[in-house]
Image (cartoon, rainbow, N blue to C red; front, side, top):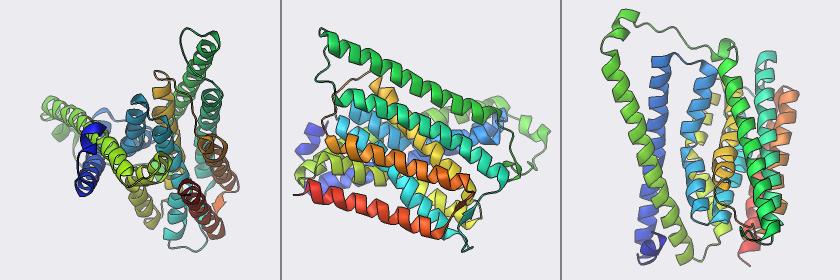
Amino acid sequence: MSVLFQSFSLWLVSLVFVSSLIVTLSSSAWFTQQLENISDIFDLSPSLLGLLGALGANIPNYAASIVSILHGQLTIGLGIIIGSNIYNVTIILSISTFALPSLHGIVFKKKEAEDTRTVALYTLAVLLTIFIALWISTFSSGIKAQAQVPLLAVVFLVIINLITLGIFSMLALHALHRIPHAEYTPPEDPVPSTTKKDGRIQRNILVIGKLLLSLLIAMGSVIIMVNSGEAFAAKVHMSQVILGLVVLAVATSLPNTVVAFSLARTHRATVCVEEIFSSNSINATLGISLPLLFQHYVLHDSWLFYIDAPLMIILTFLAFLCVLKRRISQPVAIGLFCAYFLWVGAHLLFHTT
C-alpha cells in the first residue's frame, strides 16, 4: 500500500495521513466508549475498567506499531512505542502537574501511592524484559531458521516475549482483583434495575457490534496512517527514526494528552499518573512483545537500543521514585519537560546532518 501512496503528490499524501489520523483517534475514542458500556453491562470493577480504557485509548499507538513491525519496518514500530512512552512520562506527566489548580504539584495519598507503585513496578518489569529482547535482536547477526545461532536467538526471543506477556497478565489480574478506594469508586447509578433489564439482549448485541466495528475501523485507519506516513517521510526525506519516535508517536498520543489535562483540572492527577504507567505497559506489551512473537528482525539502529530504550526505562524509574516519595513537584515536571525536548533536539541534529 505504501507503494500506492508513493505515486500521490505531497499534499495528497499529507491529506490522507491527517484524515486517517483523525479517523483513528475518533474510532479509538468510540471503542473506549463501548468498553465503558460493556463495563456497565457486566458490572466490571473500576480498576479493570481503567485498564480497558487504557487499552482503547492506546489503540493508535500499539496498532500502528504492530502494523509497522509486521510489514518489516522494525525501526518505525519500535520508534512509535518508545517515543510514545517517553512522551507519556515526560510531556503528559508535566502537563498533569501544571494543570493542577494547586502549586504544590501532584501529591499522593497513601492508598493512591501504593496502587500506583504496584502498577509502576509491573511496568518497569515489562520494559526491562523488552530491553532484553531488543538486546537479543541487536546482537543477532541475522535470523534464519537453518542457522543454529539465529534459531537459538529466536527461541530466547520467544521466551522473553512470553515472559513479558505473562507480566502484563499479572498486571491485568491485579487490576481485576484490586479493591478500589474512594477516588476510584464510581457514583451510584440512578437508573432502576428494572429499567436496565428492558431490552438487555438487544442492547448487549448492539454494544458488542459497535465495539467490533470501532475496532475494525481503527485498525483499518491505522494501516492507512502508517503507510501514508511512510510515503510522506520519503517525500520530505525524513528518517524513519524521526517518523516513528516523534511524528507518529506524538500524533497517536494526542488522546492521552487531552485526557490527562482533563483529569488534572478535576483534581484527579494521581489517577492520570497511574494511567501513564498502565499505558506504557500496554504499549510495550502489545506494540513490541506481541508482534515480535511472530516476526523476528535484527535491530540495526544503534540509537534505539543505546539511547532511546534506556532513556525510556530511566524516565519511568524516575517517575516511580516520585511515586515512592508521594509527590511530583513542579521543578521535577520542568526537568522532565526539558528532557523530552533535549532528546528530540538531539535526534533532529543527529538524523538531519
